[in-house]
Length: 203
Image 1 (cartoon, rainbow, N blue to C red):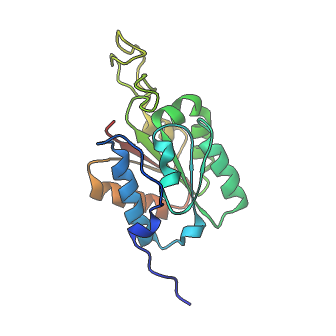
Image 2: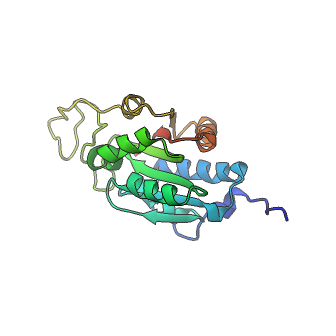
Image 3: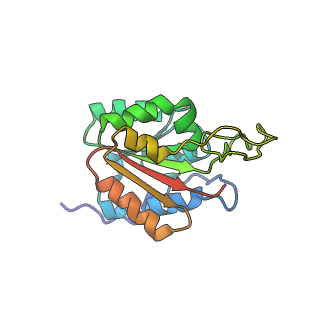
């Protein structure tokens, strides 16, 4: 018996999408819903796991299995799930603050372990959900609510960290380049091992 042919709309949940107007998250969500039918994995075999932040509302908006976990720990939950259920396609949805601040060690080690999971890192270079504190990727000198005189830290480069951890698939895209973003997500899904896709996105 052949599986039904799914469309992007089949991956949309009934939840109201609650991001700010103009947010780049909408683009990433749209491309994910467009790409998943092309991959051909049944919805009941797909799981999205997120941490905390604007990006981490993502599982609510997908008509798949999902889990909204705790700050910075999405890779830990994903590791446990993939280790016990290798038949599932597991996606980690995270942001620059979630993955690279409180979740920094978890981020490094999930890349190092090279489990067959996919990480999408939404990088807007700010803590958007909590209204504008600087994040680990904020540019030096950036004025924010927590750095009114400009951020003094040198920003982290997520791809440099991934390469240092010997990640086997590392890519970067941008929310506005939808064709490139969609193709990058598809290639990440097809990769055997941990894939990291950093997406620059507008906040």
